Image (cartoon, rainbow, N blue to C red):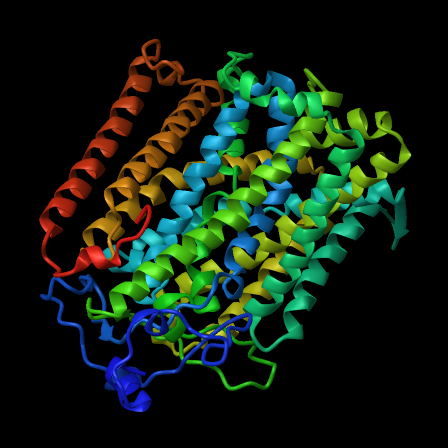
Length: 581
């Protein structure tokens, strides 16, 4: 409904909070919210008007008012799914193992990683809040190869069921599952359990007409269980003394991990959160939830549930930068940041700190892999009750992550394929989502069923490192999109711009270390040797550092010039700016 229509319906001019925030009566915000619109009948946002986004390669935006803003409790969801994607990787495996081995001096990297991911994730949400389009549709407006490249990178990092395999191994060990004979073959019990988990995930999607709803509700349940168990474990076997020493230990030097460990460290940095391809799902989840302009864009329905499908529009929306739209934008941005901060960032720090403290207390200096550290090194030493809780906590965390990974990969990839090919081919997005879900789950079952030697933890390390490598390029792309393609009143403020520069530098630094190390140690290319302080790098390694610096300088230049050029182009743009805008 347009602003004029709202005024006609109410019979008088509204102002103040009633025009910005929705009351419980007028805005019942369920698990997901959607308002259909007659898209083709809406006025076009003129592409040469500085008050509206540049359309790039694609259709023009349509004008529509921002919806009213629900209270915080009604929008919790997207960040909870992201937290679930994080629990079984960095928070219970990589960081506890790294800090136990090298000391608390590494913990500051985790805290920086959480801040960086908070900024990156909310910047990924920005385009969808402002236009309703997903981040992949925005990337397609730059060039179709961009979202396709990230989809392929996503499969490289998430295409192996490492979390399901690890969850199954933990579950099988806790249940004392051995081997079974099947048609003359000896089958490991953990493989059977892993296959059952993949099938279970597929089946849950058949329970609801709206695919997003079951994911949000199931993830919220698993997260609450995981968080509660982590805190109970800390109360039973954690060390309050160790916890109290964290502030002082952060200033210490500690043992620096060798450069050969950079793959694990980059993976841990990427998984100080969900990491990699998973982070890009924030855009699609906020659309499904109905944040901002995403409320009008359409959602993915279960094609076999009997409900009428919803139209998922190819192109997005823009809003006139006048009151109350500017006030609503400011409120949407504030509630979005708060939801991500309280659900994602605080949840990460609480769970990780509890699990790291336990690991440092009971496995200092460990040389084991993360899973073995918990199951072989810690669980037998803390007594039967706490030991069993460790098994349950790890199983839930790993399974929660695998669930989110399947959801994320399928939702992201179906969006990419649909917009690049499926829409023009006449495919239905819901059918594509369901088909890709079935194929991806089936692929996981196949990998687990094949009689090949699998090292589940190495699968995690491979996926983590690949995810970390993805983050630098897409942080660069997101920066350029939000600064060059959004108008003054919705583009990032200077605090956000500088934070994204730091985020790119942070992941770019570790990415160069990993690429150089792999080229040197695995391919024998000695000239690609890189050092943490840059100076001692080989000739080709210095070339990698130079390319990294050139990209950073280019992005900083383009973003700065765009920010300066936009200044004063939209009257009243400051009314839409909030804290850390």
